[in-house]
Length: 185
Figure 1: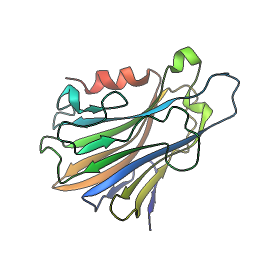
Figure 2: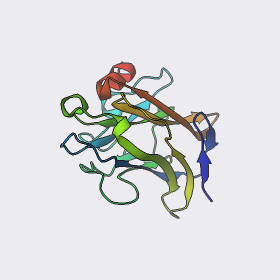
Figure 3: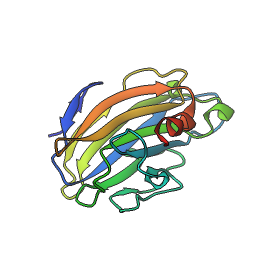
Figure 4: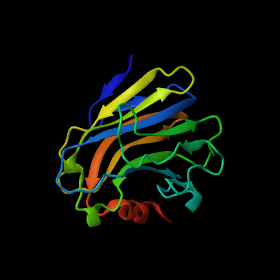
């Protein structure tokens, strides 16, 4: 049975291979333009910076160099039930230099489209065992991010040889570029 996390909670991930599923729904809005939310991952070293530029996983770079992290592709509409985007992680292949994986969701062209996370509802991140499909944990964002265009959903980190997940739920207004500037060397 999955553990439902609250903001700030941490939980062990006891699976060598797991999938990160992200989902959301769009409120009925008057923007007249479709929403395109994008999941991105930053694979960080001890210094909390990208191990290399190729360790930034997003719709234009779907695989880490060691193929331990694979983004299954960009969902341009978010329509349908369940996960809107998924990222498969295989800890048996992960580079020893990677100590943390930060999971971020951003709204593509948010400023031009006059969109923000206040117009998004039912946002969640879940982690499930890739081999058994058993859900390990889930974190549902319940905050109203009325001006934010990017949200750090959570982070997966290695502590003393064990991989854990922390529910973060921190939003900011400057989109994906802000996260890139934080994590790039």
